[in-house]
Amino acid sequence: MREKFKQSGLTLIEMTVVIATIILLIGLGLPAVRAFFNSFESQSSTMSTISAALASARAIAAKNQRYAGIRFQKTSRAQNQLEAPQYMIFIIQDPDMMAYGFRAVPGIEPIKLPDSIRVTDLTIVTRRNIINPANSVEVRLDDTALSDSQRDSLLDEERELVDATAFSIIFSPSGKLVIHGIRARNRDGYPDTAADTRISNDDVFNKKSQVDAGIGLFYQDDYFSSSGSSYTDLGLGPEQSRSSFIIYDKNQLMQAYKKRRAWSDYLVKLVSQVVYISPYTGTIISPG
Image (cartoon, rainbow, N blue to C red):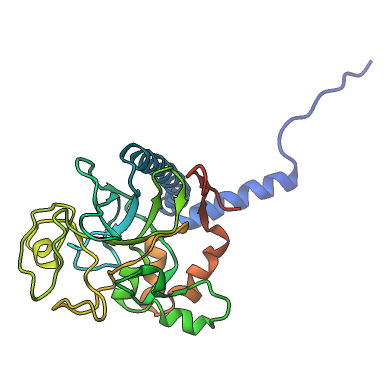
């Protein structure tokens, strides 16, 4: 009786696919392949870090019975805001400062996001209201009523880039996600105006002159049109908090921004990946 042997191995089609894959990997180069996989790992770890920070901020709001949350902002010490590291800063309302005044939570260091990762709220504030930030005029980059060229023009200056990457997520004392006016300042509440020359030693938010001198990491929200500051519009001022954001790749946005096509060449591809925050639990609702 003739024995039947079981064949093992790859078929011709399977072998062709394997060879094609190997050629593709060689063509990409090992560094490119590693970067490709690291991008997924970085986004996943960033999402986990943000989620944990939001949970902590929600707990801070409940414990202190004050509005509290997370502020995303790039360090103002960097010479180039395109490459500036972005941080998460724990903030809490200080009603003694002003109705919408927030300062950094004492004793908690800002958390730096991964080097290749940044986040944005896709919002540009074109006119700020210092009495009630809810009355400020804002434009969403994903507004379908705008053309691609209009949206590109909304994000082609450094102050606009600063604006789009400086935003806050706020929880009420009951732990609910809320849309609330916010204006971040130093812990002493000193504004940056020609009439106010007082100096704060806050090492998180501070006046521009102090941060430039190495005291503080982030400019406070005093630098916008008609702010009364002696400085030009730097894209930082009172605004509403947010309930969503997107995570983007720093280098890809940099390439598109330099061509003045930040929206049409890159950000438009991320619209389906908006990350939302649950209003009741404060947890992240993953895109897709």
